[in-house]
Amino acid sequence: MRPAKATAAAVTAVTAALGTAAAAIAAGRFASDAALRAPAGRPLPTEPRLTVHATAAGQISLTRALASRRPGTYGLSGNGTHAIVGPVLESAPHEADTVVRRLEAVTRGSLDPGARVWLTPQVHIGDPRSALGIDHTDVDIPGELGALPAWFVPGARDTWVITVHGLGTTREHPMVVMDFLRRLQVPVLDLAYRGDPGAPRSPDGLGHLGESEWRDLDAALRHAVRQGAERVVLHGWSTGAAMCLHAAAHSALRDRISGLVLDSPVLNWETTLRALAGARRTPGPLLPLAVRAAQGRTGLRGDRILAAAGPGVLRVPTLLVHGPDDAVAPWGLSRQLAAQRPDLVTLHPVQDAPHGAMWNADPQGYEEVLRRFLTPLL
Image (cartoon, rainbow, N blue to C red; front, side, top):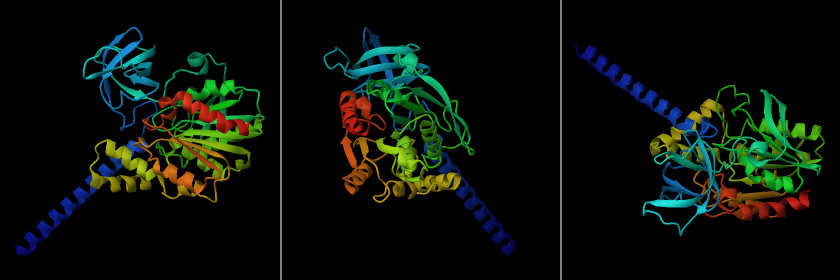
């Protein structure tokens, strides 16, 4: 009986161990979804939910929090509602647990007391014509997975700007700079890429944090050159900025790229994945499993984007706009990149701005820095 009892105990132990391992693997996969399945137009895990307390003429009262006290202009989204909110109105009467901001417009739905909302860098919704009154053309760009929808805003110059959004947003996000670029008479191509609404899905249904998506940006670059662009500036946010770096390093048309604008760039996908998974309250011991799960599911490797941004690879003037309050893509890596190539890279820090929201925190300052950077390239 002893051997039988010993064997049964061993089987039980092995089964329990396998069950624990399987649970850990499943937890790692779930945690990795924070970055690999970040749905467009939904809040990142780092973005807190706020409650609408009241609205009045040109004002909205929100839960008092660090997020609701951010300076600048933001979108406000939640449950089919979208609005545009401006700066905090410090002098407006309010309760101790609320913050009053300027309410610029309610662009969809209604803001009822008790509604749960979040601030988003995506200020405008719709298309350039409906949101900004800017004439544009809807174009389909041939990509390796199928047609990629894009908005094209014409301009008089032969240097184009291609804009590429990042995590948690859509091609509506780059509309924050579209009117500014139109005033410079720069043609703008605003791209939707794989996984976006209206665009093809990745074969595995996952986001790759720019490592495969950059090929859609390469398709947009080919389209721009075919349509007469002599030079192209790539302007990307978040993982879109990573896509710009990959394209500048690997595209067959990289010689046509005359400059890069990198807003809140994801320069280390492992750090970003850990940050997003941690914001979803993933226990610390499971974060390495999330990284390994992401590698196994997508083939991501940590050195590819760093190689694309390496001192010997980066060859064009680059504007880095980033801030120390970015909880998704630590700005220390942007500082390192700027220090490696001071001859090419200009770093413009922005205070009190979350990930991807450098324009939102200081629209006038952002556009002035962008104007000074772009003028010699046009």
